[in-house]
Every structure is written in structure tokens, then in C-alpha cells.
Amino acid sequence: MGISKIEERYDRNFNTLSHEEQKTLGTSKVVVIGLGGLGGSVCEMLARIGIGHLTLIDGDVFEPSNLNRQLLCQEDLIGFPKAQAAKNRVNAINSEVKVRYFIEYVDESNLYERIKDADVVMDCLDSIDTRFKLQKAAQKASIPIVSGAIAGVAGQVTTIFPDDKGYELIYGKKGQKQSKGVETRTGNIAYCAFFVAALQSSECLKVLLDRGDILRNKLLIAELWTNTFDIMDLV
Amino acid sequence: MIKIDLKLFVTLSKYLPDNSEGLEISEGTTVEKLILDVGIPKELVKLIFINGKKQNRSYQLKNNDRVGLFPPVGGG
Image 1 (spheres, one colour):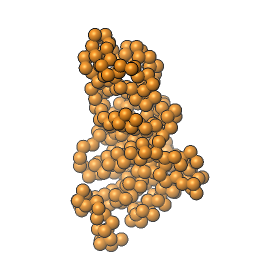
Image 2 (cartoon, one colour):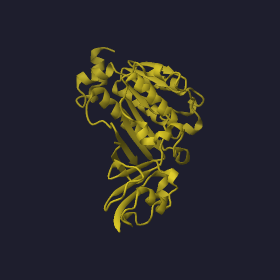
Image 3 (cartoon, one colour):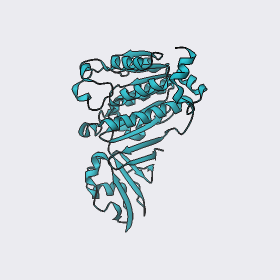
Image 4 (cartoon, chains in turn brown, orange):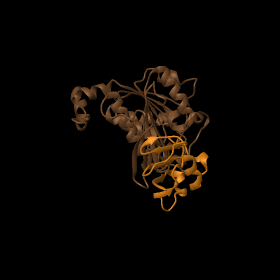
């Protein structure tokens, strides 16, 4: 895409973002791990705002029960790999984005390799113990994590830098052996997933641009039945 | 007696007492004891926030404290 077309594409990003910041986003590398309720919407937003390089990872395929909340899930994609659907969607929105996608689950064996060149990792996982594994790999690679989690109409977002205690402050040390939270009982509602994904995307931008207030050692908690929006100090 | 504001989130909300705003409790009550008194199975509580700051179960509650209790949230 030529300069004028880039100007046109991002015209409505200006002047909330400067041209310099838009260029920074264009050279930024972000990894999205987990492409369900959170990750699908995160991909959509990062592609539209102009992140230049996206690595999209999920081993799962779409199921009918994903239709209620996962942006990338549609009836004709049941059985289709989420990572491939995410790649297709990102490039349909923005063909300039360089996308790598991996139809695989993550664990200690592949996490470091997949994230090591990134500027930010988006934790859109649905497993607490895998989140701890991700933090270990991100610490080794010195990469910040933007983490989101949802249950029902409640959600939380935090940003973890390599030196931070991170998930231990949220899930406790024993959390490393815990796979699921209360979302197994509450399910997840679309607007809450989209909302938390939006907050994550905002955090991602702020980290990449070193701008605004970042939720470092803080947990933003939202509960939509009661319109509760709080930022809690974790340390 | 002292008064606190208690908020319970997600799956804990069903344990919320009627008078949760301005809830009267004995002076010196810890969060641990509060959880017991309200009847929440203690293993369900993962995060404790007092006046917007993370605390642990041994924290002794003070007059006008705002208490928020959360279960573990991990969906994606």
C-alpha cells in the first residue's frame, strides 16, 4: 500500500495517534495467544489500528458453543482452525499486516520460541496454569504481557513486565496448579469478552507507544451487572 | 462495633448479606473471620481488596473499610 493509501486507511487514527506513533505500530510485533472470546476480538482491533506484525496461536477449532461470543466464529467455520480463521480475518481487514499463525497449543516446549522476537504478548488464554507458563517464557525473553480474563460478565486486565510478580499476585502461588477459574460455572457473555479485549488492546498500544497509564502491578476489574469498574493495587 | 462496605463479585455475589453497605462487624475482625461469618466457602475467595489495595486474609478490618472479594477468573 502506498503512502497516500496508508494515510487514508489511518486517517481516523489521527490525531489521537501521531504519524510517528502510527509508524511505530507498523513496525511493532505482537503475539496473540489464545484466539477465543478475547483473542479473536484482540486480533480484530490490532489489525485495524495497524500493528505491523502479528503472530496468532491457538490449537483449537471452532465449535457451535463458540458462536455466542467469539468474534471470528461463524456458522460456516465450525470445525475450522481458529488460528487460520484469525489470519484470514486480519488480512481481510488489513493486507499490510504480516501474519504468522500456528495451529498448536502452547506449553513449555514452544512458548519461548514463539514469543522471543515480540514487543508484547497478549495473554488471551483460558487456562490459569498455562498463563504461569507464559509468564515464565516472557520473563526469559524480557517481553511484557498484557493479560485479560473473563467469567460471565466480569473481567480483569493487567500488564506484567518481566521483573514483576505477575500472576502470583492474582492467582496465588498455588494458581500454577489450577487450570480453570469460575468461568466454568458462569460461561462467558459476548459483550464482556469484547469489552475486556478492547481494554487489552488499549494496554497493548500504551506499552508499545510508552504512553498513558499502564496497569502495571494493578488489576482493572469490571463487573457489568453492577457497573463496577475499579483499578486495584496488587502491590 | 465498626461498619464496612462489602462487595462480593461473580459467583460470590450470592453470599452477599442484605445489609452489605454499612455492614456491622466486631472490632478486630479479620478478613478470614468475615469470610467465615458471611458463609462463603473460604476456598472460593481468591482476591481480597481493601480500599482498592490487595490484602491478605489476616488483615484486621477498620471502620469504613471498603472490602471486595473475588473468585479466580481465568476464561479467555
